[in-house]
Length: 111
Image (tube, rainbow, N blue to C red; front, side):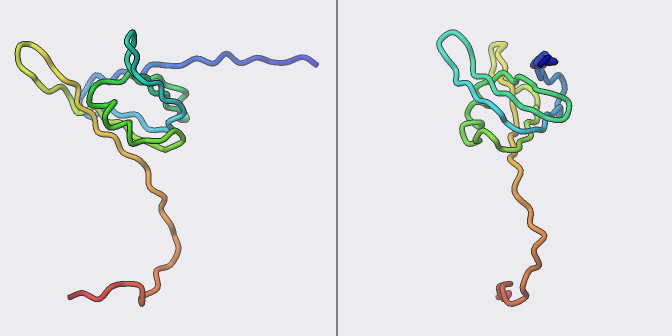
């Protein structure tokens, strides 16, 4: 049987402006090594994207599990002095939203 092969390519997400963001499912996390920084793989409807870690991003991504739906937003660079900067990121994880009706008796009384 003949097979049709599809080439898998990762695109790199590199934010340029404050507010740039990427949303999708975190499908892989690779920790930082002595030779290379941490890498995160995010998949969405536009494809699979490689996101390079940074001090701030790595710290926040420790709390995110593979399979989580996430949004990473670049918040700009923070000056550390002496010409050094630190990339700032916000990381959000999607919460499950339920459409289940709320029973009025379950709502606590206002005090």
